[in-house]
Image 1 (spheres, rainbow, N blue to C red):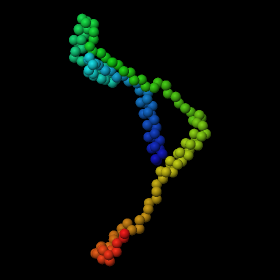
Image 2: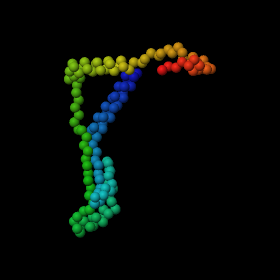
Image 3: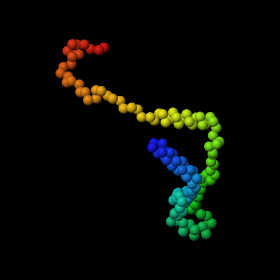
Image 4: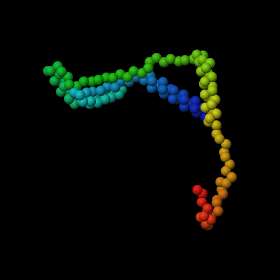
Length: 137
């Protein structure tokens, strides 16, 4: 039961790792001067309200104030698979010994019997050490 659950969790984690390492996305940023107006992932960044005015002014001065910056984050596109036949004997010995020691460390301990669990001590009427004036030094 535990091994089956562990296998499913490990498989799911590896599938997510492969998925996230191969995903590509773009980040689009819109700057008006040196000020970042909007940044968007997977969509187009919103333009500033000065964009229409800038287009008209750019026709006259031929200089743009606003600019768009697009950053492309590319994921891994080549995946390699290795076969079990390529595992050396030393790696097999290490893997078997690691799994053996790990599985033995997860064994449950036997329940301990506590014989005095329900015992309540007698009521202390007077402290005998103080009465006899005997103290540990």
